[in-house]
Structures are given as C-alpha cells and as structure tokens.
Image (tube, rainbow, N blue to C red):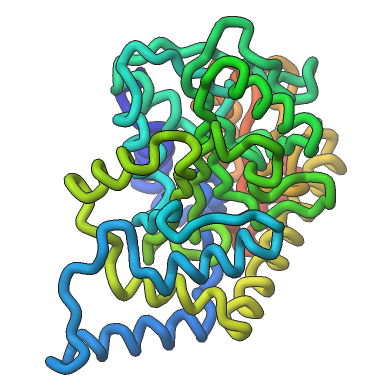
Amino acid sequence: MPDRYLFKEIEVRTDAYKAQHPDARLLRMGVGDVTQPLPAAVIEAMHKAVDELAHVETFRGYGPEEGYAWLRQAVIDHEYTPRGIRLDIDEVFISEGAGSDLGNLSELFLPSNRVAILDPSYPAYMDGSIMAGREVIHLPCTIANGFVPELPKQKADIIYLCLPNNPTGTVLRRHELQQWVNYAIENQSIIIFDAAYEAYIEEDDVPHSIYELEGAKQVAIEVRSFSKSAGFTAVRCGYTVVPKETGLNAMWLRRQCTKYNGTAYVAQRAAQATFTPEGKQGIAANLAYYKRTAHLIADGLTALGYKVYGGKNAPYIWCKTPDTMDSWTFFDLLLHQCQVVCTPGAGFGDAGQGFVRFSAFSNRKDVEEALQRMKKL
Ligand code: PLP
C-alpha cells in the first residue's frame, strides 16, 4: 500500500508548489469535492435543528444507532419505492457518509474471504482490503474492454462495484449488471454496491439501484451518500441498505450498535430536507451545474486532442495522458506549467497508469481558464 493516501499526496505536492509560487492561481480539478453551496431548504433545516438543541423542551441526546425513522422512511419513499423496490425500514442504516461504511462492512466477513476490486477504482476499496489483510483479485478496466470489467475467473467472496464508476465514469446497462448479480448468486458472493454517483446517471437503461435487478436483495449491500448528490461532503450523511435476505442485516445492526453511536442529529435533519420539494429543486440546480461542467471539460479536452472517457453519467473525466507519459509526470506537468490540479490515474490502481482524472466539481470559470492554459501548453 502506498505510504500516503492518494489525495493526501496530491495535497502535499500542490502545497509544495504553492509555497514556492505564492502568487500562482491554482485551478483545482483534482479532488472530487463539491463546490456549490447547500440548497436554502437544507440550511434552514440545519438552523432549526440547532435551535431545537438549544431548548430543554426540544433538546435531543443520542439518537438510534441506525438513524431516525423519519429519515429512513424518507429514503425508502423517495429513493426506492418510486423505482419499484420494496424495503423494510430496518434494512436502511443512516451513516456519516459512504466512506466509513465501505471500510467497516469488511468486518462482516472472514479475513480469508477474497475480494474482487475494479482496477482502477476509488482507493478506499483497495486500501481498506489491504488493511483488513485480504487477498485481492484485480479486475482491470481498460480501453481494450471499454472499461467494463470481466466477471472474476476465481471465486470472489466480496465484490466492490462502484457504478457510475469513479474514476472512469463507466456505467453498466441493466443486462450487464444482472450478470454480476447472477455471478454473486451462483458463487455465494456479496456485492458491495457503491452508488455514490447515482444522481449523475443520464441514460434510461442504467440502473440507479442494484435492487432494480432480479435476485439482488439476496446478494447486495448498497452504499449511498448525500455527499455528491446533495453537496454534503462537509455535513456528512449517507445510508447503507443491508437487506435481510443477505443474512447480514442483524450482524450489521449489532456492529453499528457496538461501534457507531449514530449520525449527528443536525446532519440527519439536513438530509431529510433534501427530500422536500424546495430541497429537490436546489439539488437539481446544483447537479445540472456539475453535469454541464462535466460536458464542458470532456468537450474541451477532446477539442485539444486528448482522448477522454466518462463525463457522462458521472462527474469525472478520465483522460489518456499524451504519448506514453505516466500519470504523475503529467500531473506534475499540468501543475507546474498550467497551475492546473488533476488526479493521477495511477493512484486508482495499476490499470490507471497513463491516465489522469479531471473533476467536474469545479468552478465553471476556472474550468474555462484551465482549458485555455492547457491549449497554450
Ligand atoms: N464512494 C466513492 C466512489 C467516492 O468517490 C467517495 C468520495 O469521493 C465516497 C464513496 C465517499 O463519500 P462520503 O463523502 O459519503 O464518505
């Protein structure tokens, strides 16, 4: 495992450059962190929740470890029921975001269980699996296979699937994802389905939830987050669905009650407000902004002669480096020559070598200027 977490390494290199060039105006298109402010309805809900905590009549202490029923029910009513998915309220667990649950879920499995991970992918799966001492099966996603992974050849007990994918932007169509569910049923595997970017799906035959597929409730845990859909990277709230049919629901509740004392009340009220008509409207406006930015980056880089993937169904653009330049060399070149920060693809896995990722979570004007600077380069 690399000594430093990918995004820490980027921060260190960027800070070092900034220290040497204090007047440089860096254009950040690296870390996948939202930039648009929270919708007014969410801010109001948080103010109200804080005020409740200020008065003895409305004060609250510890909440349920698995989250307040009003939020869990809102998740079911707004995210699952409209897609024809039936969930019981005790199958939904509110979290402080996807990041921790993606790692913590590992505790439900034997250390000897083998894990399959897409390469490249969000580093938490690989780093977390190494920390848990697991054997890892790499599933390369390359230009040759259109970034669509093949089913594991050996038996995988745990499969991390992130769709739409970070960093490649890949999505699987309904029939493609069904093959993974079928594999998991045949092999008694569990799929940990990271749907952090579900809100960016633009095409009709791309499932928003793995539970849209037949049999998925037996074999899939779905992890979701308000971070990238509603701008909650600072607020911290998400949820994880552990269907009873997986046989893991009671164990996850037991784990959470022991090791997690619940998500902050104010964050849960904020999350609840995302489901109000005003909240939905504000979120839709932010998502439209990021989606337009993604298209702008993809089109702009293509016009400059780069080979790009993603940027559709996902806020990330996966860009082939020029010639055979390695990812970190191109990162340094863009940082030093254009003062543009991207993310080196090699940080997402060996198959990410020779790529960089651009994030659409950027100020539109900065993106335009970054493209101008790259044009000069
Ligand atoms: N999953 C993926 C694929 C991500 O890209 C990220 C964050 O960038 C996360 C999970 C973590 O999200 P959260 O803020 O909910 O912890």
